[in-house]
Amino acid sequence: MDVRVPWPVVGLAFGVALGFAGAFGGAGAFFLVLFLGGLGFVVGRVIEGSLDLGEIFSTGRTGRRPR
Image 1 (cartoon, rainbow, N blue to C red):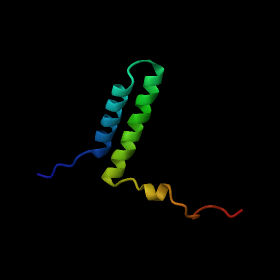
Image 2 (spheres, rainbow, N blue to C red; image 1 turned 30 degrees about the vertical axis):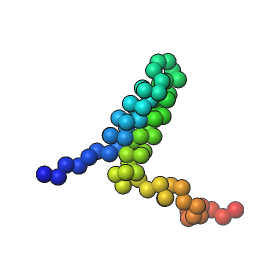
Image 3 (cartoon, helix red, strand yellow; image 1 turned 90 degrees about the vertical axis):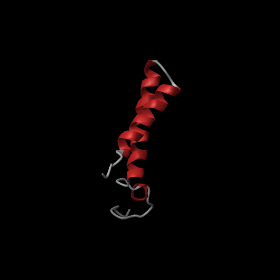
Image 4 (cartoon, rainbow, N blue to C red; image 1 turned 60 degrees about the horizontal axis):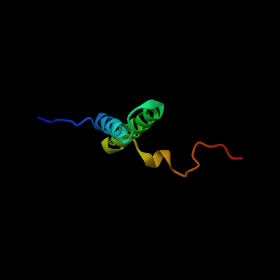
């Protein structure tokens, strides 16, 4: 039986858990949890292989208009 780990969901849960552990209560904690949850989701996508950070942060000029 091949069990596939849902890395984005694991990363999201980890980020939310870190947010709750880091700050508990108030609007600031809400935004901290939101940020860390999103960051955890992105890290999960990178681990899974469905998001390539090299494409996002590449310094190539493909698709840009010359000035």
